[in-house]
Image (cartoon, one colour):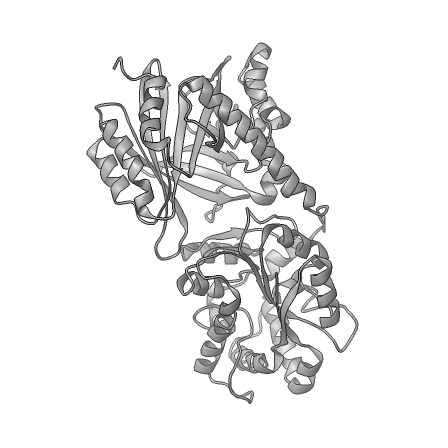
Length: 533
């Protein structure tokens, strides 16, 4: 065991990874009862677009005589994205860790697995699952798992505004499925001491004031807390891309990471947060829309069809007497007609994803890495149950988690009160905007559809899009092709008994009103398809 030192291990990693591109360095320090542990914990990450890019990691594992089960997992990784090799020394004994970040072939959802082993020993497996705040699809919230002593400070961390707006938490599960660790993600790399929740945790752990600078000045990417029995402890992680020569000591690695993470923090502040408009604080809207868009799943399946598309279809034949088969085809066409504007294989933010019908299509047919956003808890749980990447949240209160090639709003912009602000926010986070928007040209702007839709004219829509800094490259009215959808919904609703579901009854009343003069209504209420860069 004499050879297993931090310096020796860094040398082994550098021999294989030092000349690679796409390398990140990471280290962590731990706050535990009465002290700060800031030595012997670091990780090297390798990123790549093709499996061959991870051959250096295979050679690292060979150098370290990793267990065959670990080496096999690395070789057989499916759709690899990032791989990390970490070490944590305890009383001079290293525990090695291999992290594998890949994607599910069917849904392109991210998945993380990990193996931990002592030199010469067998490896134990764990998995990491990421969830956006506030909760998992099963209703589990991160603070529910934290030890009692740490819970108040941890909950204060969870309430950080930026964390609530655009990030979430990891759950590390052991091979038996039990949660071992909760990890909050801070993608803007804040300085640890600026987070009051962390200062409260340090006080609970009785970390001496003389050690304050050892942790409080660190730009952090993650904060992890142990779950279950054992002494309370909080681990802070910092990470940055490798720039320049490979570090030859742990002190050099830490200095390099601190410098790079500080630069990353300043860059995010400059390029993202300083460009964002002030947060809109509409009161009562999220809860109202959440309740409105709930309802019985099977009833809604009878109205919307088997693939649960909650948007108008685009029909290629005239007339309102459309069959269910024609409706299903028109719904799929309404999605596929947008494919020329959506970069295949790109990253898509589906704002107002509903029950996930379109989301499933551009994942399956375009190979797009996608994230759906819905304000409905029922829809969130349903879409997550399909294995699709989805987030529960209000588009006016949250922020997109990172940069997307394309933001899509398929008949969802009408539900946004402050449309100008959302369009400006999306300008920061997305390279392209693709929308279909229900407009109201025949009467002044007003609320509609049970007060859940805040209508604007097509002229005002153009002003809003261009005023947010977007350049329109495509614009057309799709209402004539979409109008038969109302007739189909109207027909299907006739077989659904009148009930207490406010949303369902609002749709029923709306369909009956439109069907009294569908052509005239369509002329006055365009469905605008707009693409902007």
